[in-house]
Amino acid sequence: MKPSTIPPVPMCDVVGQYRDLQSEIDAAVLRVLRSGQVILGPEVAAFEKETAEYCGAKYAVGCSSGTDALILALHALGVGPGDEVIVPPFTFFATASAVCRLGARPVFSDIDPVTYNLDAEQLEDKITARTKAVMPVHLFGQTAEMNTIHQIARNNGLLVVEDAAQSFGAEYEGQRCGTLGAAAAMSFYPSKNLGSLGDAGLVTTNDEEWAKKLVALRVHGSEVRYQHKYIGYNMRLDAIHAAILRVKLPHVERWIAQRIEAAKRYDGLLEESGLVGFLRRPSAHPHGKHTYNQYVVRVPSHHRDSMVKHLRDHGVSCDIYYPLSLHQQECFRFLGHVEGDFPASEEATRTVLALPIFPEITAEQQTRVVETCASYLHQSIRKAA
Ligand SMILES: *Cc1c(COP(=O)(O)O)cnc(C)c1O
Image 1 (tube, rainbow, N blue to C red):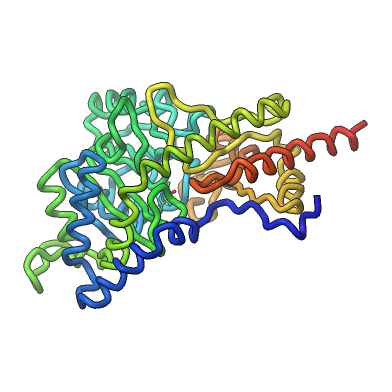
Image 2: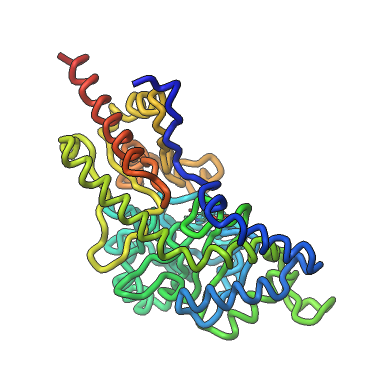
């Protein structure tokens, strides 16, 4: 293998979908540029309607990013100072920062080491008189264990807010995320299942009052121009993103099917190459539809750094989601956690490795990824001998 002459296998291919849909996307963007309505307006309204239909939710409110969708959802549901919101510590930073932005306190509850999602069994211990909501994250493309979470939430009077940023199109017992809680936050960051060419997000809910409040909150808390009912935000969705996303939405099911197919191919290739004793493959929850926004394997911790280097040296991209659990972040020191508080999350930070996956990945690229993983293992066995 001459790594310098073969283009590397990327983690994702943002330009690929644009190339495939270029004439439609160009036309949609030009339509917005010529309309003069570049913020909110009819493109955003149409995108909201189409996305609500796709998710099976009554209302969808577009906004500026997935992070802002989390803030808007929590705010609309009344989370504020003095409240606690239970979140997993093994997730993207915004899950917990959104809680802090509202003056509330994130309370971490450890993950299930198999699915990487909230371990519903541990949830109940984290509930206090101040707990207002639980925010399960549907990490890497599959939903959390929603039945148990809802049961606990009901018994304790808690709201359930979905962080569905990584799992647009994922299902739990035949129901798409976006309808699995009181409200759900979606991200259209370019690498997500449905990605724009910039930042964009959306909140879904079935509650009319919350939907109205979300619509106001994203424009400075105003329902009537220059009259402010709430202290809101500027978290509007640009029409260009809505127009691009409207072109892409009808293709998202096919892209998810391609992700699932690519994941199955990895499963098979890893098995065939005898790597499954060394790498642990991701596992899909039997009650759900895993959309494989990421294909994350587990590597023995003492091998991970050298394996990352080997893959990258041989033209295979890979990444660590996430190298630190949120309770280990400097900005969350005030929560007073110590190492060992969330063992499953900490173990995940030491062993996870995300391999390239995106709808356009080819069988050849995947073979190369797995062969490079295998060549790492053979090399390290030779070194040890
Ligand atoms: C991407 C992501 C977000 C934030 O979305 P942005 O659009 O990047 O702001 C929030 N939570 C999770 C789990 C994510 O993966």
